[in-house]
Image (tube, rainbow, N blue to C red; front, side, top):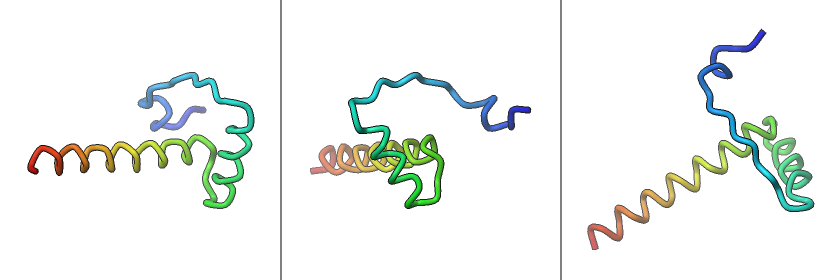
Amino acid sequence: MENLASRRSDQFNLRLPDGMRDALKAMAAENRRSINSEIVTILEKQIRSSTETQKADATA
């Protein structure tokens, strides 16, 4: 049975360059996460960083 978070999440198919899936798999294992969770974590950090940079640029 699907869990509640899965039913509320958007799904997105992604094509990765050769070797990137293996790199993500290794990173995920090192951080004790699924590949999906690793990708979400990376995206969240990048979005947060980008947003902070844009705010800093706007106030400069």
